[in-house]
Length: 502
Ligand code: NAP
Ligand code: MG
Image 1 (spheres, helix red, strand yellow):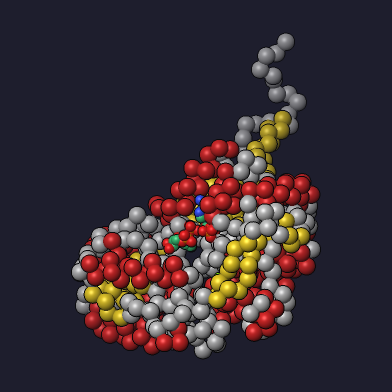
Image 2 (cartoon, protein in one colour):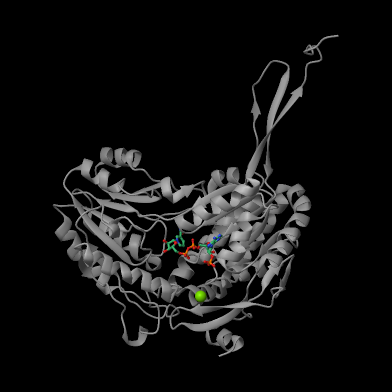
């Protein structure tokens, strides 16, 4: 099928964008090279997408520099207005974006409609409103002086986005950067560029000046690495694996770029003896199985009090086995394929790791076969492990794969929760108020959910500690990340004596 046939088959009203977006125009790569993006349901080719090389990134950086003075000096409320308009356009084109995201990533269409699209619009809207509300301070300093701070944009920022939530993460990255007055060169993941390019089209419609946002799909090791190294880029914001995050830190050293990293996780989800069991079972399933487990904050380590473990697991296994796998474009589908065949194989390889470590597979552990045999599917997988230090309970699997551990005492539960190199998201289920707050304080992670899991909101800071990275997305913290502080001293007292009176 060619591109327009695919467009019709998926029910898309507008053509699928497949070129780079530089200086307000969709263009081919200078080299003419392209990269196929696939539908993970059956691994068929959706589109050949232009692949940016160094020369294309250079053009994007130039365009972003040219656009910076006007964009950063524009009245903040006017920048905000463009983001608000974009949020409206995202909603107006919601079905289009949902279908495109589902096609390219394998997210169930029902999730795209209910979560990815509204959250993307919500994020642009929140930061559209934020643009003229983020402000400096006046500071009481020495008598006779007025001291105040300016929050200035950084300049051209580089952003590298992964494939697990391409649409939503495009908004998390772009919205605060733009609200603060920066201009952008963004590289989507090579396997999921389509919705980011659609956002570029909507930006243009919203009145975004040319060059403010530039999108350069391409290879991480080429375009991504070059963005991280680029001497004319002031900051790099990255979401992805811890290993790549470390490479980015090294690459950024040349011009001492500001770096923001949102990396991997191995979220503990602790269920205490006094928890509401039904709520915990449902919440734990959402925590790990939503988006096929491809979430840095996934609750991938289930930590159960031994007295309720059997009762919990009986219900949890039944729920996992009942999740409807299928074509993500089918509204009945609850779980789609993983986003690539390579990633499916990597996830399945952890079943072997678990078995070798003496783990017991309680559910799943295989691809479904049948109609889904050509796709990147993995059944919801539950593995009971022997020790929380086992590899399978330490390394990020990033799939519908949860490890089960049990504990006797609260102290033991805390040791397990804090016993990985990561520190991104974690959850706990209890009806004991004191315990809830104590654990919220003691757990080493950037986010803690009590009697819930995986809630996000554009107002609430999102990020990690340890090997999960540093910096925060969302809220006022994100605005701080995308600005630098300038301290201005003004002598307001003519009587102040100079240091060398003559
Ligand atoms: P990854 O390599 O970290 O990729 C994330 C992004 O970084 C992609 O856009 C990638 O481009 C780009 N990239 C790769 N190498 C780069 C480099 N040297 N310099 C600059 N950018 C570079 O992640 P992955 O290999 O796709 O996934 C592997 C694992 O990462 C997953 O299993 C999971 O553990 C973790 N992960 C975490 C998150 C998260 O939300 N925290 C998201 C995705 C993955 P390409 O697309 O061309 O590779
Ligand atoms: Mg794809």
